[in-house]
Image (cartoon, rainbow, N blue to C red; front, side, top):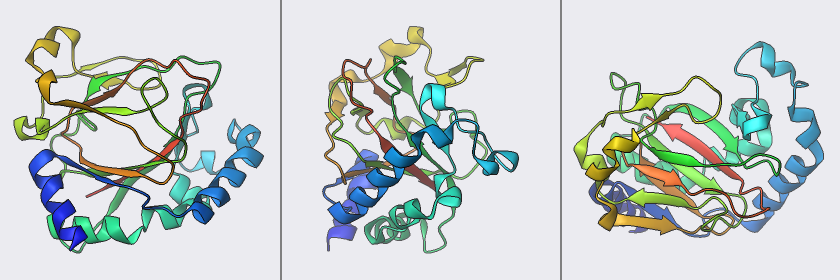
Length: 219
């Protein structure tokens, strides 16, 4: 079945792609919610008292599953659960979630990195990245190095400002097998499901698209 094949891809390559996994009516509902509430996200959300405040300047809305019910069906997309249950078992924990985008007044450039690089003592996580916009080169498409999860955790550096605060040092880029790099374009509703240890990045922005995507991390 499709879930079994996708599970094998996830284990072998470190990622798998699910095309048109979210229906258009669900995407339209989220688009309407986002458009009508964008100004509200900056310093107005009462949930800021109980968790991370949204980082609107860098285009990160934290904990959207907990705050806004419209996002919950995305995290509960059946094919995600079917694949992950084959890989990590039936007890699946939603570890973290956010909506990410590129504010039109802010340049976005995500360096090569692994997710949660600074948490090697925790269980391995799997991230579902769900496109809300068309994501292509220069407008949010992920670049992924196939099979890079096999090397485990790699050295990283940190920076103190907000936004993407961990990444692989540039002097270590020579160790990356860029011959296995793939740029993965996503249409709205497509999902990339990947192992946190897969090395990935996003190229500098060259579009006025918000490049929105929702990410859910499971373990």
